Image (cartoon, rainbow, N blue to C red; front, side, top):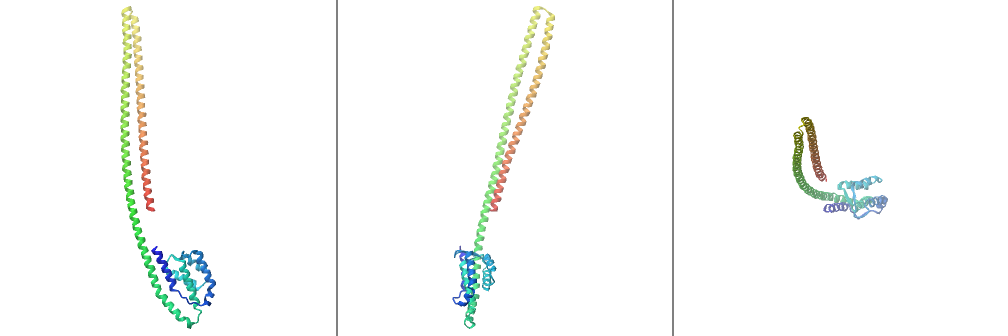
Length: 310
């Protein structure tokens, strides 16, 4: 706000250094039409009295008007001011004084030469003061902008440090989660292996009991054969029954061997399938954790870059 007020004061000083209440009515009437055009242009570019006008836009509009020495003088003064925006009222005052000065040139030389010489001397003495004020205003504004920029840089550095700390914490937490998951998976795998071992032991006991039961049946049949042999003393019958029992025993043994082989193959296939399933689940979990971690790190990095760009 101080810079804008300083610019307004300097623009009014420029208008004041051109001020002269004396003017020739004939001179005003000579440029009245062109003056009304310029005033209409200023009103169109800044409808309110307190509005400011862009200097470059105003110079473009003035150069498009019919050729006039006062318009060229106004453009020259705007170049000397070297500001982006000037108050509309200041431009209006400068324009009116330029026209008044132009009109005064129509007065006879004897009555106006001294006045014009005094005006030029006053203008030459006042312009350096106005320029000095403008430079001081720009210097203060530059110092203010530099301070704001330094504060902004410090704030960005602090935010960047916080963001890096958050990234490190996120990575540490992700590593901790991975270790916990690996420990849980290891415990689950150990439990599965223990369950398989218990199941295999139970099957072995059941198999042994089945074999003992078969052997008991065979022994009972042998005992029955012996009883028959002793009772009937029929050697051929005993031999025939003995051969039959032997063949039956061999057949049962072969069947038992085949069943045992099939069970071993079935158990092996189940174990292989379980191992493959565990391996597939572990790979899928590891991949999912790694993917989420990568997305998290990428999102954090993008957030930091977007924050820096702002």
